[in-house]
Length: 184
Image 1: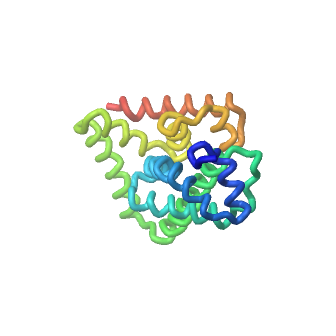
Image 2 (image 1 turned 90 degrees about the horizontal axis):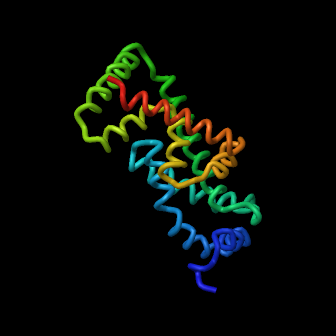
């Protein structure tokens, strides 16, 4: 059986059984998509590279928790979501310790500046900027659906809700994105 015909689940089952060489094809298949996913969530390529590496470190660390009956793609993206959430929570704790009135005023000014800049940039940059202004949960669902190609069933499993609830959340996120994008 060639590596290209070996399923993700079979490869991860081998990794789980301590055949760590089988992580190489999984890395080759998922490094790019996970990096893109995390880049769209963080808007920081260097940070996204670090977070992507952390995902693969956690795959090794928590390989025994993988169940061969579950889709690897859903498992690895859930891990990426957790890595992103952990990073965000650490950053929030650091920010709370350092927050003062000047920081709050500067953040407000930057958000207004972002809207002004959106009018000047081309439509791709405008959309990217608007996406970054969404709250993380809304941005995440749009990135999973529109950029990573996840269906509502898969998103529902990741978010712990039904496919219909995921569809509703995606619709609301898209409405919020439209408001930001078309704001005067």
